Length: 135
Figure 1 (tube, rainbow, N blue to C red):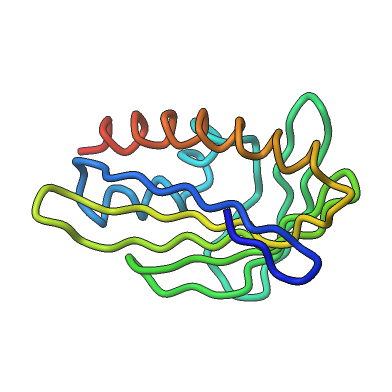
Figure 2 (cartoon, rainbow, N blue to C red):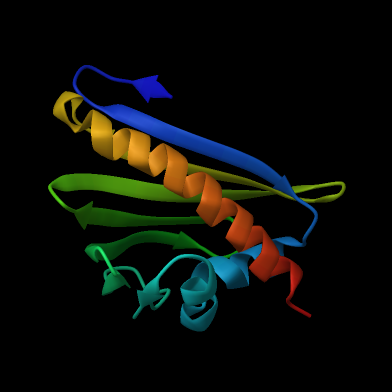
């Protein structure tokens, strides 16, 4: 966790025994995103607005940056939280180091922060399973 003057940032990192290309596909292909995260209408195009849909509600998103097989960043807005999610992929000798940073949690959003901390651990595990199933 990092904290600036008035917001917190959640960072989750994991070493995955899968190629950059497989992890990137799991992060950027709509049917694969649905398998590990939520229903969506994601397109890997800067400026594209998309929704992530779950039984608890909708996350409104917009792609901010894309660097194929290296980085992806998008706005993540839901339930009063306005944040930015940034994924960074780095090749390793055994696969891919994946880093996710979600920034923008205000001091009065501790519950959202704790929920994200819990949720991203589950999403990372599911993402790793999806990437591992790709040929």
